[in-house]
Length: 124
Image 1 (cartoon, rainbow, N blue to C red):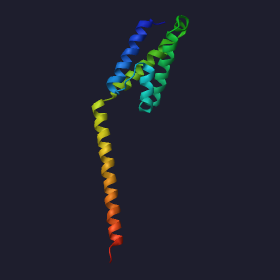
Image 2 (cartoon, one colour):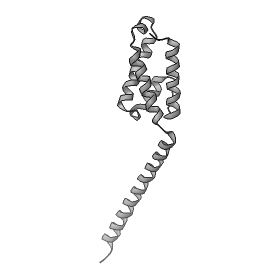
Image 3 (tube, helix red, strand yellow):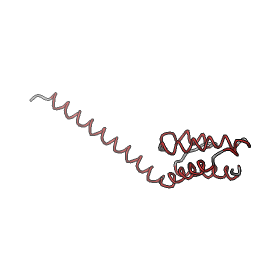
């Protein structure tokens, strides 16, 4: 059995980690995790559903006593270990480089099509 205040502190720490590392906004943990979506790996999404289920059970005194806290603590640890590996600056840089790479590729394809069109239209 765990104290509800201690559980809520863990939830608030997880919320702040999600907002810092993944830039996810939301009033509740459920909202933040829905916004994370597929940006979280499958294992972390399962851990998140475990935490959300435990959050529902912690609202009821009798259900909170039955809750398996080792699984919940493991889910918190799993999510925190994943969030610790993330670097927001690196992700931002990667997103910008991917965008620029896509633009350059499209421009090269356009130039190739224009060259082929000119070569096809010109009298030989």
